[in-house]
Figure 1 (tube, rainbow, N blue to C red):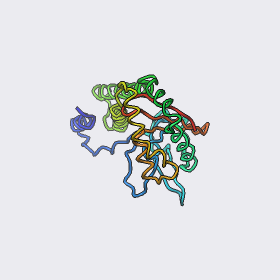
Figure 2 (figure 1 turned 60 degrees about the vertical axis):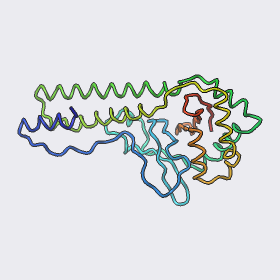
Figure 3 (figure 1 turned 90 degrees about the vertical axis):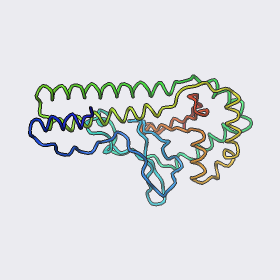
Figure 4 (figure 1 turned 30 degrees about the vertical axis):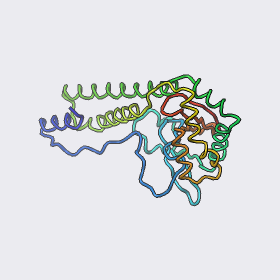
Length: 250
């Protein structure tokens, strides 16, 4: 039984009416429809909360922002999260593209293939899986306690917000966990073929427009984690859909 059905039934039984529930808060917003092309759309995560940072234009410049106001109310991370975190795109792309060009350059090709093949499998997935499972478990524990309180006679109307927050956090964590790639072994031939496929785009990376860069970053399965305090980016690429990565910093 869903939280909404659970609370509505008890509200009806106690003759308090079944008033509409507030819309669910989400831990992470889905992508907004936009005509502007953001080269790093969906690829930059905030180092404080690990949510995706959203692209936002300011005059002629593009920034990626993480706003504390969009975090679920009551989340512990709010105690330390800055009001807004901004990452200017212009400060990232030149360094990022130089790094990618170097990885794909013929003189570094063997090293790149070896690094992707020899990286420890599943490391990044595991480090993201455990916190998500912990969040799911914590949210489900709170849901059980709140439901037990209502069964014991607590006023459901007073607990609706807490129930909705717990379910929204659980559902958001489940969605993110389901989206994590499954680990699998990737051999040198497959990695080498991937680099062949990317070579043409990679050689043009410094002159490419936002749409072409977005294509390259998607093919590389690029991921960036921005540490605003140190003003550092942890950058990684994956070999195909596997979990093996080449990492770098900018």
